[in-house]
Length: 269
Image (cartoon, rainbow, N blue to C red; front, side, top):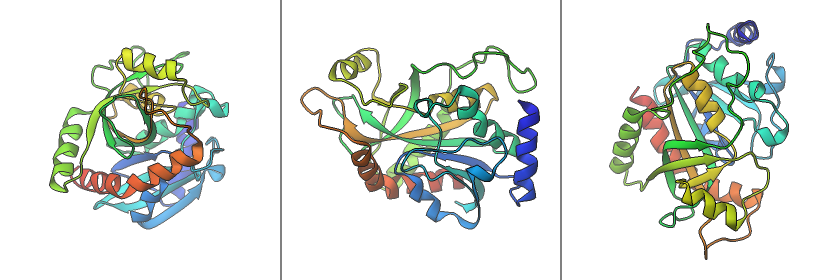
């Protein structure tokens, strides 16, 4: 795998992508954050060696490099999912590329269903921990040059970044929640019984991504910060018919608030 990573990095550096401070992976309906990036270099995933190609509406499939929050960043406008038929290595390969490009922190966002009864549609939930119900992306041969065979996950989400984000949100009068994110394979949205089960085992939100990327980042000792935008509710009595389109619409409504938090947080690195 390391050889593939090096080939991809050589290609990206040849296009002018050098020494980014941070990486961002953007979820459904949240790709507009990239409009804040200045002096950009954009590369389609299909043109990047060893990169898969996103197939989901709302995931544009572009790598964007430029200035954001007074830092150099690389943003993934679109991510990869198990339900698209990708394997673990394909889903997490871009995270390894970002690390070897030189990022110091990884920032992630997703659209999620809220199972905490105190949540409302449109809430921003800072992820403090997760429950991974997807295949662990580290199953299989381990390359000790990249990371340890048994990485610790005691602090999957960086506590100092969480504290900074809460402080930034308060400064801008942005209400935020904190909670535990649970990931499933999708592509079906959850049944009422599944929503209830996920709440019982400790989840506050549920989605179809993020945890493989975070596990992979922590395998390489890369600090992570992640947020869920609550786009629908899986709370008894509040469950409504959900579509991918409705999720995109609700995620887009929250974009400006999330962008404010991310901009100031990245500037503080």
